[in-house]
Length: 439
Ligand code: SAM
Ligand code: SF4
Image: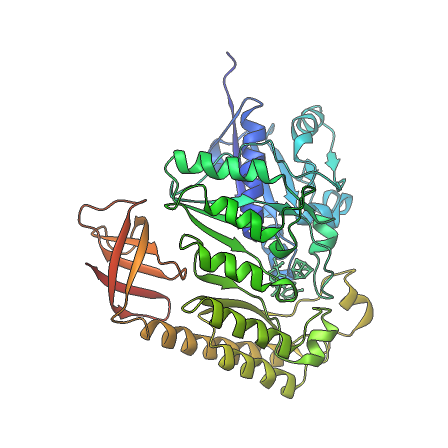
């Protein structure tokens, strides 16, 4: 038997990319590679990349420069760029980054072994063809860097919403859903292997649809029914498609986690329209009210973009007002970064000065810190069922896990281990973490 060659993969960007890396890991281990966490012993380096903001791309480019050193040390070393940057830049990336041998878009991973052969023959290899139906449904992901407790399951790919700022519809192609049978099977297998939490992933999970009529609510229910001890999460929901039916399904299954990520992006109706988000602030508020009514105690998190084209101080205040009104438990907050060839790039001017973007972002971050702290403080005295995930980074005597609301909870380890469900009474908090005692 040939000695296996070593693959080192680095992943940037969203959870979908981390999930894709596991598919790539599976394809490569079927072709006589094994993964390694030690870059200096690698025969093959892959970077799975993100294009969502300019700084994500800059980070990857800087990293590619560092890889030159390994190539000098090991001349046969092959370097591949995967994912959204590969798709967006195509051949341009090969001419700009000479050390790159292989360029592979997110729908072409099955072609990796062939592309590698081409590269080993001394030629540059590229496949950035997007597909209308590829979902990698039959590929069993290799759970790299897993904690053995929580796992991602990709349920759909691509996006057709064309929010005006966003590059995803161009880098990930048409929206397509994966066969529900394969999703439920994967969840069942994970449970048998000891996993206790799955997160169903898609850019807009609410528009999941399979040929037999299965929509997202039904799919979620089927996954929740795999086992009451398997927690189910999902991301991301688009506010325009979040239905009461879905909220009622969540309410009916205690193992569907009480946490919804509902990116608002902006609180201003004028900006939401320019962003092509297809909802306005009153629709969004009405969706939040539905969550509060149907799922009391459900955590709500969001994404916010500040400094979008033509955003005024009033638009910015509308965003702060929305944040205060919802009182988000958590938020991802970004400065607008213009992406080439998006609708916003073609139609609007990126005219909010960088300093103004920075000031607004800081105000948004400060407010969110306060809201997160308030939300965590309100949990003091409450008892939550926590799924233990790992030994706490700060102290070997503590375990860290999450409650249903997706908040990190740290508590004394005692004889508990990752994968256990433990009731913890919260007695202290920071803006990011709850601390408590086992009861
Ligand atoms: N599909 C999901 C959605 O619509 O909510 C998430 C897509 S994206 C990977 C995650 C977040 O990145 C978005 O919700 C948005 O806040 C942010 N984002 C996308 N494009 C951006 C851009 N050009 N500049 C700054 N932030 C951006
Ligand atoms: Fe991008 Fe909008 Fe699609 Fe999310 S829904 S991936 S923000 S285009």
